[in-house]
Amino acid sequence: MVLLNNREVKKGWDACKKQICSLFEKHRAEIVSAKRWDELPLAFPVKRQLRGTYMLLYYHTDGDSLPAIRRELEYNETVLTHLTLVCEEIPEQAKEPEAAFDIESVRVEETNLETPTPPKSESEPKTEPKPKSKPKSKPKSESKSESEPKTEPKSESKPKSEAASAADDQGDKES
Image: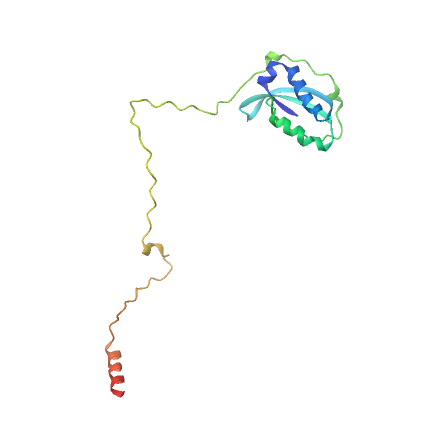
């Protein structure tokens, strides 16, 4: 199945059909049936289009030519998207002649995804972007987690207790 751009279909269905069929035949595919399935609104925009015409193709080809066919379909401007499935048996209704349709009934609807920004007036003051400042570092006391016990820093010179100094004095007398 190939989803075609309605802008191209509106120019001429036969030309679109011939272009797609020749693409398949170029890569040694034998087309069994190729006909217009329907023209419908899309559930979401595809290449900025809101509507598309589905072309249903049944063809035979070897597996080696499928990557080349897919690549050509991807780069073809008439094709919005495509889907290739393996079909064990081609239904009889696929071999029926294509129903006629009114080319004027094909509607082209596009999305406008790009919204233009209004130009700045000359009376508005121009502002320069502010440079990003570095985040402030936290004090060391806040960086520790609260679960860790806080310890007092050890000082270089500790005053000796009276008992320790008395023991030192006795050690001096013995020597």
